Amino acid sequence: MWLILAVSGHILNALSFLSDKIFMERVIPDAKALAFVAGLSGILVLPLAIWFPLTGPFAPLAVSFISGIFFILALIFFYNALAIEEVSRVVPAVGGMVPVFTWGLSFLMLGDRLSGRSLLAFLLLVAGGFLIELHSFKDLFSRRFQTSFSLEASAAFLFAASLVFQKYGFTGAEAMTSFMWSRFGTVFAALGILASMPAILARLAPGSFKSISPAYKALAFLSRVSSGVGPLLILAAISMGNVSLINALQGSQFAFLFVLALLLSRKWPTVFGEELKRGVIMRKGAATLVIAAGLALIAL
Image 1 (cartoon, one colour):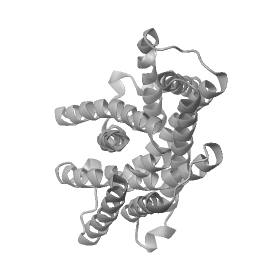
Image 2 (cartoon, rainbow, N blue to C red; image 1 turned 60 degrees about the vertical axis):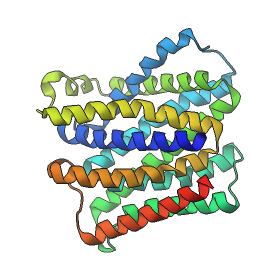
Image 3 (cartoon, helix red, strand yellow; image 1 turned 135 degrees about the vertical axis):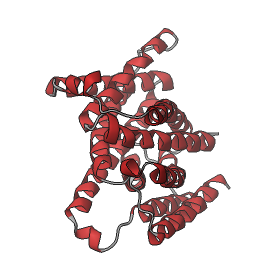
Image 4 (tube, rainbow, N blue to C red; image 1 turned 180 degrees about the horizontal axis):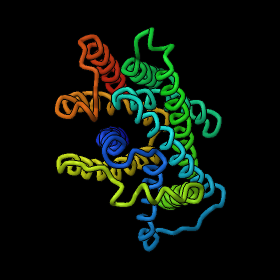
């Protein structure tokens, strides 16, 4: 069950990442403004307090709250990387590094272990993610690559910390209570962004938005829905299974994202600008096969 939830959540997240790229290019070209919007959406969980308790052991709830803060900080780095690099490179790069950081943090905080077939699946999924992101040797020394890589690594570490902290919260408190406190953390982080940058509201004023076509609006709306459902499915999977493997399953997201980004790049090249060279497509295709092998090992 957790495998189905995790894969479904990651595919929905792929749709939301495409939306993020559109927002960065056509709607709100400001990473902190986008993170503010994402964080403030945590208010939407408040009605759940009617059915689920907000009280519990202090430590797990405090850690859950901090996980929400880490998530918003990760989004700031992620959006900045997305602004300067292709979506089919940024997402796999971050997704490939998140399992590495997650494994290290899970080992220290949760005592999680990977062995045998699970370890091989983990390695295949991580390797596939890095293969998709791979640039040419010459690009490794460019300022653009170094900047994007540092942003991606920072985002990956913070995403991993957020997920491991959330897993810790699940182990010590009711799952929904822990989840709500993590959303309160995102709201707190959003208010912190607003306090440090009060002019951010001007970036969100309707008159400051760039003109976008109905097609962009429809795609962005559908992807925003995906961004709300996807994380819920992943968090549900985390509450049931191994956090390192669930994060490594982002490989399924990479393959879906790559194909969809290529299709959209043909229609909207100024937004996505994906490389359509044969060598790039073949390399990413090979990475998809590596990812599929990792998924098959987990499903066996």
